[in-house]
Amino acid sequence: MRHRSGIPVPVPQPAVPAEALAPAIDDPADAEREAGVARLFELHYTPMLRLAVLLGADDPENVVAEAYYQIYRRWRRLRDTAAAEAYLRSTVCNLTRMRIRHLQMARKHAVRSPDEMVASAESTALLRDDQRALIDTLRQLPTRQREALVLRHWLGLKESEIAAAMGISPGSVKTHTARGIAALTQAMEARK
Image (cartoon, rainbow, N blue to C red; front, side, top):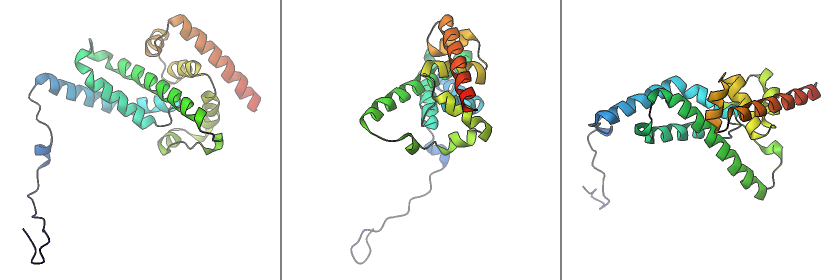
């Protein structure tokens, strides 16, 4: 349709109901996957976001979103859907570790002072004032020690679960946890 000036005029289209925009799920396995990931999201999004924040992710929302995407893609390959939470936790740990490594390499080439680092609003909201000094000290620890402490003391996981999430042996978990606690204690006492 054209206006009398010759300019095309958009023709209003009928509104499309939301149901028509959602993809049709014909395969029962796809429906089960959709329901399983949705259930996992409802139950574990906030704890996974906290985990990413405590592990030092600069963009915890993106890390957790990527973890959910990866579990969604690999849902059919899960041997036990009850183990999906552990797989998700392990994925968040791995993605956070990879993101930190990437940022470390990028920061080697860019010179900035630590004061320029800005925490996301979500990570700031998740931390109370009395936890900030501890979290700042925790962030100074080596990656493996920080991961072991967060998984053990914040999430309350067993050594075998931590070993599975980090991809290391239970003996290494004990070593990283002991060294992390010693370094954290020493750093916190030095702040007093």
